[in-house]
Amino acid sequence: MARHILITGCSSEKRRKLEANLLSMYDDILISEVHKISQAREALTNNIVHLLLYVLTKEDDGGLDFCRDISRPGSDNHTPCIILVDEQGAGHAGLHHGLQHILPLTSPSSELGSLINKICNPMAMRQTPRYSIPETEAIIAQRDRELQTDVLNISSGGLLCEFSTNNIFQVCDPVMITINFTGVEKIASLKGIYAVLSSLKIIERNPDFTPLRIRAGFTFIIIPPAVKNGLKTIFAKAELIAAKDL
Image (cartoon, rainbow, N blue to C red; front, side, top):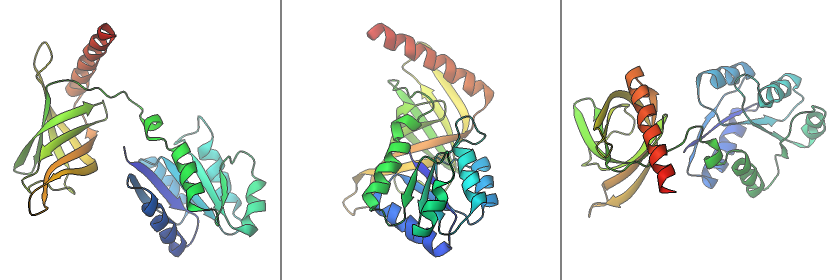
């Protein structure tokens, strides 16, 4: 599952430097950046953000108050924050009680990386259970193209699948997904799921090194009500079967 990190509170040059540092440590993060607190607030409202990195290089009560408010449990758009401070900002940031994670800008990359892993543990971030249901397939449609895929696991918010590309899959394009559950008592076909790519890994290549087989994760964006109800029914049956097997 990709970890979405938002950087704000400093110059664009510092944000890019921090972004490059993070990308050198992780291959499962998506980074966005904004300059103003108003832009950060809008990003938290309209996008998925798992962690806010706020870089404090001068006194900024408004920014620290914002970080304290959104990191408070139960707050609207609750988002964990890490405050990165220079020497001059360290004492000022410490005066703002409730800010749990404060690191010097000069901290080793490993220290920042460990803290990010602690806060954004991929397993803890999963808000819905994932189910591995045998004989489940998905058809991914992009414009006039269709790909047959094998579904490895699925939740109410997305799925992980594998498929042969034939060089026709476009990673930037959204997809329409049809899921066929052929291993359940009554074959179910759930159609019309609008989704976007969230992760991609090449697991097999052609002799000319072009991708042959891909493992891809998709996040559901629009799910028809009938599909939601169908997924609930199928997941309930999967849980009953799993309980019997224990």
